[in-house]
Length: 401
Image (cartoon, rainbow, N blue to C red; front, side, top):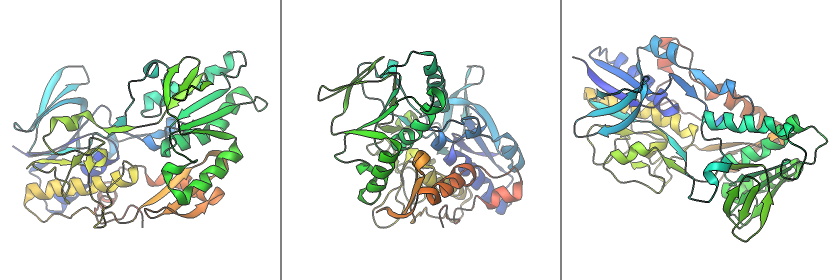
């Protein structure tokens, strides 16, 4: 009976874990180890693009790729991890409960938006955290044209001035005008706890965000959080009310609930602490990767962020090292010393930075051209050709050169 490397999740980290594991097994000529991936769909849903209008292009099928490289895909959703018994209990496509055994497990089930217990938030706030929620927001925006013009109808409040909030807000003027017309007096308002526009992204980039916001007509309400959401808008902690028919929540994120099934230390986001090979501390057969892993990227105290940039490299390392552990060969410690940011700023363009201090390198149209290339090419899976796909899964290939 074959030994089993089981991967949970088909996001960036799960996909690249599978390819990297197969790559090492292929190189070692080991046919006695199977790589199985469990996920609700055999597709990569490109979450970093869910703030956009064209959602159809944010889904990349993985079936042909898995078939080409020899990854066994199982459709279903994991519900419980039994670390002691080395098994995962899941619900299959028909809703039936069953299980899979493993010799090495790679947890790559990502993260999700963390909504606080505020009045009205679950009923009246949208988000762009999943494909389904992004589709729900898009359908809502299209239906705004059926309503009579009003201040609330023409207003979108984006809660949160971090990466997702900024990209959502700066895209929104163009999206609203496409639905309501160019002559409508629209309002896009970012509500953020920061003391200045874009402060969550760092001092070096903040002035660029402020310039783009001003040009696009995106305004910011700073220093006071939202205390309540209803069908007509939001109320801030300071008592101010903003009339809005559309509220998009982008604040807070937490690692997959499946991390709670594994004994181990966690960070504030619920990510499991891992060693340099991405094995969960205190576990002998479980690796965490992507948004489930609290992983050091260098020797200067920096840790991976919950981004596809880090998830791709984390996946390549986790797959390789889980397979190496099983085969008894030398692992390749995870390192990702270069960090960049490419922030979409709607019709204004984009801003590209380098380093953890976010040194601005490109802005405007030049930044937008690079952002478009990243969003439509770089982060998509390789073509379903075995040799090419496995070569791309080398953990020593930098995601950002």
